Image 1: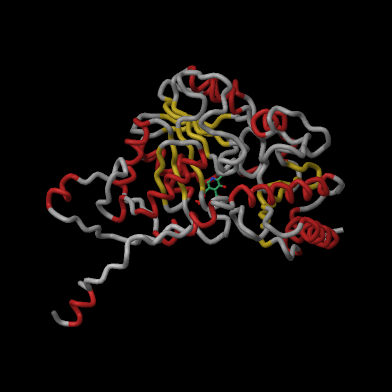
Image 2 (image 1 turned 90 degrees about the vertical axis):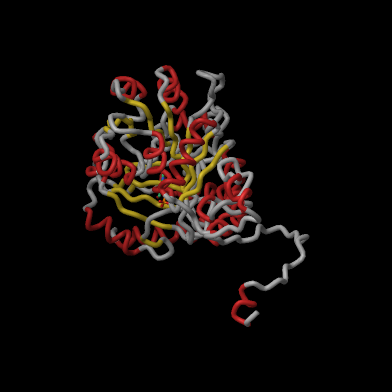
Length: 410
Ligand SMILES: Cc1ncc(COP(=O)(O)O)c(C=O)c1O
């Protein structure tokens, strides 16, 4: 054998009994089979075998199982971003002529997907006011098949009455899909939050999780997951996932696996810091509203208490129990111009201007809510709006940064 061939077909195999805490990174397009029969018989759908890198490796199968563990699900598919996971649910479970319902405060790109590709495929959409379950009931159409849910809503962080919305969907036998990125499997159990079984299920049918956020935690990986407890939906999701060619890289899977063991600690720390920052913001006259589910004046606070704080009501302006992630939004006094709010954002030093959340660095994004909402109370649209994503810095330093940026626009 010539050296070139020998380098490729080297007969050394390391001993197979290596055990260590971290999962190995398996990277593959080709997967080898011992013989033709094995090639014909092997099945990736139930994870009993490996067929091709795109269909799973030990690393990706392990991550799928850990995400199932996190969310209380039985099946999982992984995708290259949270947005791809949102798209995958629609593409796998809908067909031309079907309709979907989307909360008015849903993650913006889901709305853009509905208005773009889904519409082109003949899949219609309706928006509903998530803070008014009757709005969902009233707007359901004869062709509605799937209802999207999000708790709390993106950017404005209103917390809906998730059990009430779910019960409406279950009473009409509609599929439900929850964007569970904020809850992250830490704040509440997405597949079992109803006190009693209705229609055989105590939770949603499908969960989407942008693993880019808390599961990664580093601000350096893009990934998404779709989970379900239903075997029928899992089969549709897996087959469609395979046909569309979605896959994730072994290195990325390993990075998420590495971070996953500390998700609760990071979530709790960012949550606590966020509430400290929120409490300080509540004392600043420049903010007309502080939106955060654990703040008692925030829309849907009572629903958050029910779902994420064991039903215990707040003893102070910022509830100290339960789980509430690391996002808060600030509505400024309408007397301030957009120029002043932009100056505030530009003056921030520790907070960086950037999208996404749940990484180590705190982030700020100004939003123009008027362009984003149909059902918002008019008051919410008065004044500038900034969302803060709290990182792992100390609360004192973050508050000092906000204070110095406010002094710039005094
Ligand atoms: C609520 C929510 N869902 C989904 C996504 C999409 O995740 P990704 O950035 O991985 O596409 C985001 C991203 O910001 C989000 O905030």
